Image (cartoon, rainbow, N blue to C red; front, side):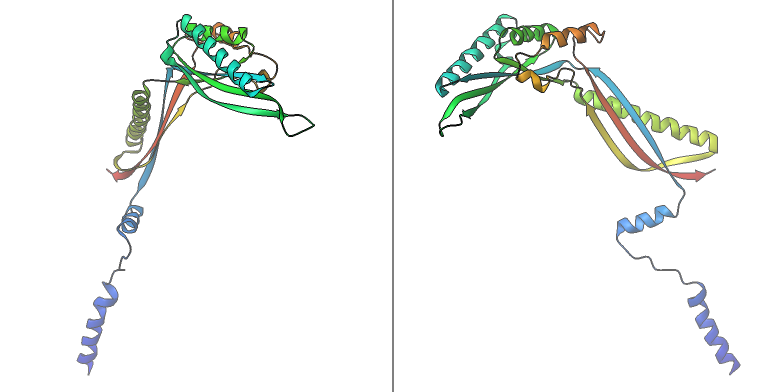
Length: 256
């Protein structure tokens, strides 16, 4: 009887002592579980690349208002044609001048349903590469009452190259921090995965017309241009394009 009990105890012993918990779940969940069992550290790096904008899109608005719709439309078309010719004579290539679609706004009087006047608004987009061309546009805005300055959007032709440089700086910072941790703590770090990766483009708007400029005559784009030039930011008058990169790399800590 004692032998039988001893055999039963021995049969139950492996099941109670040597059994391990069963791991269930998706491959991603299992990987996360195994990684959590190790010693991990996340290293963050950031990099910035600043470049001068080498292109700008200047937006203007031509507004005409007349009692008759056709009269307002014809006047708007004539002014836009004259404006284009002035820009071309000032050294701006005609291919860089784009006429956008117009919008009409009827004005109604207190009596009757028929509009008392019509207002035609049409945007003009001009692509420029230097401040001399901006001065040409400024002269048009300041001398033609129906032309209003809207805004300037800056562009950079070497976008991809600059984004790569910003990312390289972020990775260099991660590498420097990794080496510092290894030297100071007496460990080695092995890269596991990239936790985060982002690159943002920041293009400042240097020239921006206030809302009141559209109600009381031409906006003073020439004065704004001179102010930027006198500020010492460069002869081009264009602002900086800033690329900011950020990355996070997860490392496994190896004890020496």
